[in-house]
Image 1 (tube, rainbow, N blue to C red):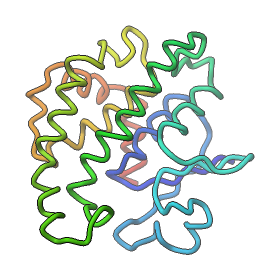
Image 2 (spheres, helix red, strand yellow; image 1 turned 90 degrees about the horizontal axis):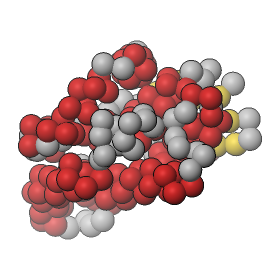
Image 3 (cartoon, rainbow, N blue to C red; image 1 turned 30 degrees about the vertical axis):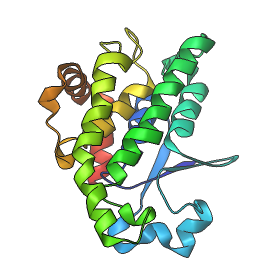
Length: 206
C-alpha cells in the first residue's frame, strides 16, 4: 500500500490532488506541524528533511513535490497527467513546477519560516515585509508568461495545475489580492470545480 504523508495548508495538497486525479489507492497520513510531528524520530525515519510531502512506495520513499508529481504522472500514463510522450513539453512542465518550488514557495516561506535563513529578528521581520512584493512579482510572471491557459500547459490538464492551485491559494494570506491576476484566478476557480480537488481538500480536512 502506498502511504502519503501530508500536512493541511502545505504544498502537499498538490500531490494529494495528483493522487486523486490518478485514482491511485493510497493511505493518507497527516503530519501535525502544530505538535512538531515533522521533527519526531518516527517521521524523520521516513523523511530526514522533516518536511512534507513524502510518498512511501514499495520501492522506497519519494520526497519533494516536483518529484512526486512526475512519479504519479509516470505510473498512471493512461490518465495523462503529464505530456510524457513529448520530451520538450515535459521539460516545460518540469520547469514550471521547479519555478513554483524554488522561487514561489521560497518567497512564501520567508513570511513564515525566516529562521531558516537568519537568527536576526530584524532580518526576519524584513523578510516578512517583503513577501507581498515577491509573491506578487512571481505571479505577474506566471500570469503574463508561464501559464498558457486554460491549463498551465495549454489545452491539456497536468499535475502542474494542482501545484499552481495550491500556491495560488496562499496569495490572500501573503497579502496579495488574487483579483490582480485574472488568468490565475480563473484557473483557481476552474480547479475548485474539479472532483479530484474537492476530494483532496476533504482529505486535508478529515
